[in-house]
Every structure is written in C-alpha cells, then in structure tokens.
Length: 146
Image 1 (tube, one colour):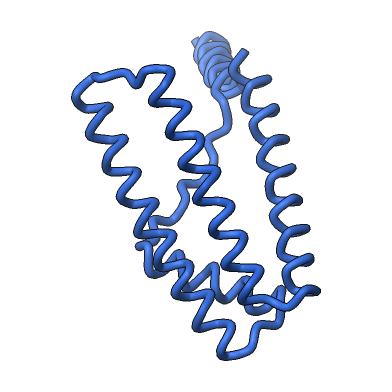
Image 2 (cartoon, one colour):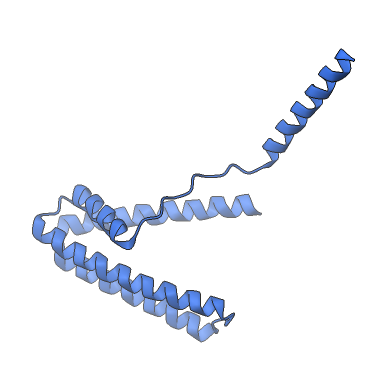
C-alpha cells in the first residue's frame, strides 16, 4: 500500500511539472498610468537624457500633452469603429497612415525648434534605437505565435 501511495504521488508530481512546461511564461502586467503620469514619466526621461533646461521642459511638456490628447482621441475613434464592426476601407487605411505620418513630421519639426542641434540628434538616435527594439520584439512575438 505504501509503495502504491508513493508511486501515485510521483505520478501526480510529474504530471503537474509537465503541464507547467507547456504553458507560456506570463509576463508581468504593465502598470496602468494615466496620460498625465505617462507624460510626466516621459518628460523626466527626456530631461535626463537630453539635459533639457526649464524653458525646454515647459515646451516639451506642452508638446507631450497635445500629442497624448490627439492619441486618446484617435484611440476612442478606433474603439468606436471596432465596436460597430465597421472595417476600414483601403482608402481609409491609407488616409490614416498619411495622417499619422503628418503628425509624426509635425512633432519632429516642433521638437527640432525646441531642442538644440545636439539634443535633436541625440533624440533622433534614441527614437531609432527604440524603433529597432520594437521591430525585434515584433519578430520575437511572431516567432512565438507561429
């Protein structure tokens, strides 16, 4: 009886380990920040990386506030479209891409007017690094899900 009980415990233990190995590791949930908290966090990061002075901080903060307000508006519009099950047409997708590129170009122009030449170049290189990291993460995500 004792041997049967030990064998059953071993079997249950091994089965539970096998199930854990099959499950994908879950990553920690990201903390939910308000738009104001995100803006402050981003401003602090930019201030430390680019050595912004007080005037530049005020201008960048206003730029971040404007940008996040536009992003929230776009997010709501997209959510409404998704809820109504209306798929965007190819022309609407192209218009949205053009709008996003125009927003990005306008943001870059504003940042260029706020920052010094060295700060702007450093900011662009940081953006390029972040973009490369995102591409790598997307490739990794696609490998995992295929």
